[in-house]
Length: 78
Image (tube, rainbow, N blue to C red; front, side, top):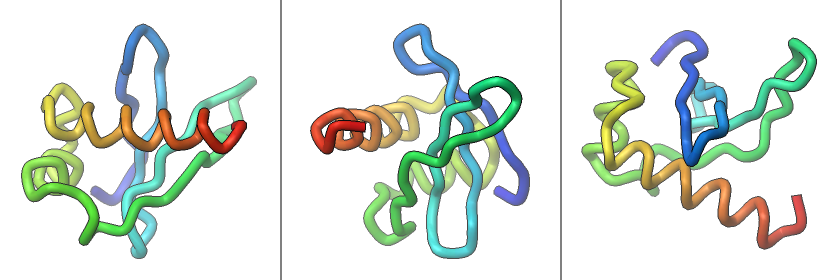
């Protein structure tokens, strides 16, 4: 995945991109993206990695992985 893709999770829109180290998850606010976290590719299930690389944001494995990132962000107080 070379450019930013949007994904909708539970009615909210998030931004995904691959930064060379892993999958970055962010939120667009007033035109700017605030990156919440980067998940190493090795930590993602194969189905989620494949979906991210192909840009298939409707893939259930990718959506589950992004939900996990968002839940971790909430638990950290973000």
